[in-house]
Length: 268
Image 1 (cartoon, rainbow, N blue to C red):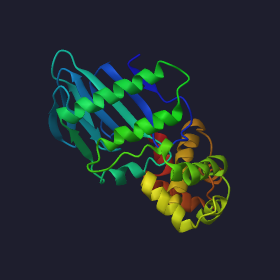
Image 2: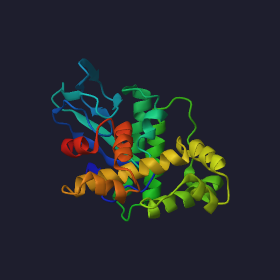
Image 3: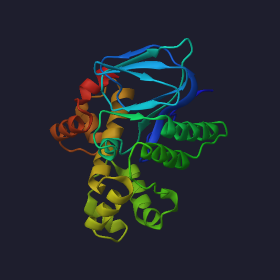
């Protein structure tokens, strides 16, 4: 199967929402963009892609990463156009923009495109041998995102002692009790380090502070409630994801996504 969809809740820092290769690409128009970071690469043939009014060609091996909600469309220029692609989410999805320098789009040349094509092919094979190791996929997702970041070393998170000792337990605590009154001080005390050191570790490994991670995880869960519970009021969703003040929840949601919770529900 040339495409795989995420079938489980978002519990990892980075994870693929969709990923695929050998895809017979159809004409696509997105006047409001796509809600996630979206990578598209020509595998065979040539495509034409228009981003915010500017048109480009994607020759074989070339690709482009497009930021969320950036207006774009694409279509085949040759009779056959096969693509590889991936869309990115995760509990710190909003941190991707910071990692990538807040660029609306990043073009990839054939040399780097060849590396990405091999990596996506390796990832696709993992889906063919269930059960899929979600942590392994999360690291693969991070590896792929790093292809778009110049001069950044790839951390093999699963093998980092500091990550395993301090970050993993805190992430598990956030996953289990994101709806409770969690604070960075409380989270740091559970792994016997200071709040400042915990945030430095989060920034080192994940590109965000512990507070940013907690807030982003809550917003990610709010997105799930908005999409799967069409009649649930925004006030109830705010409470279910750990926000005591609905106004604060709406403000944080808009800050991280660019739209209000109700606008997100309508868009999706």
